[in-house]
Image 1: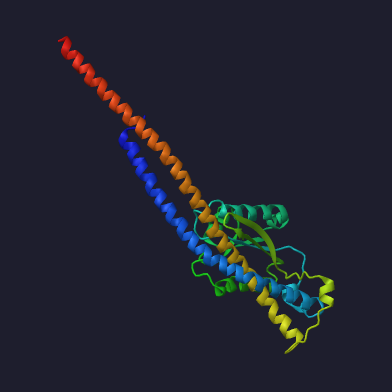
Image 2 (image 1 turned 45 degrees about the vertical axis):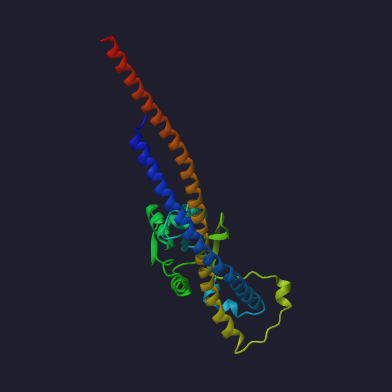
Length: 293
């Protein structure tokens, strides 16, 4: 049985850890509110922009002229994996790394064997995790969440767009966590390039637009913006998911700390009682020895 001093030290350590986890939960909750507002406001805009491009392109041949809609045989692939820069958020990061690894091995095994699969990491955890798995990780966006903004996401998107336009990649795939609620994050795998327009044909045929300055100029200008917005939306989704996962994880850690504290207090009381009993027996034994002498 552990000594009283050891048990007291463990109780003090657990109390200190619980204070840290409680504080981290409160910080995550405050950040989650802002992140949730940001993605909630972004979703309608991004969805409407994609719908507009899809509808207009369905009624026009201009969309097919864009280099970002070029469909080629998939020989070279870029996977953009979005995680956080920090840990202590449960399985949030490891799930993305596992999903990325599974996607590459299941869908792009032929390209992987030929050495034609590259990975771009948005977040330090993705960079470190995928490096350990032996993948070629390019791009330096491990601090994108430190100063989260559209400008940072746009830079990463433009790198992928330029490489796709130059023929370095035939397909660009996004892997990220979509925010559903505080306790639930859904892993999404979405095609970023080539741009695929999905629209209801009946709705598209009944829609009439007046273009100013010109149909071609508008469509070809909106398509790059939609691609950049797609990546930015994925980053915002991941950011909100991270804070939700960390809040849940720290709440669970605090609960586990409370359970451990109860067990340690029982051990402490038993150890203390055993020590008192031992001392009483020693005193009684000493008194009996004196009587016999």
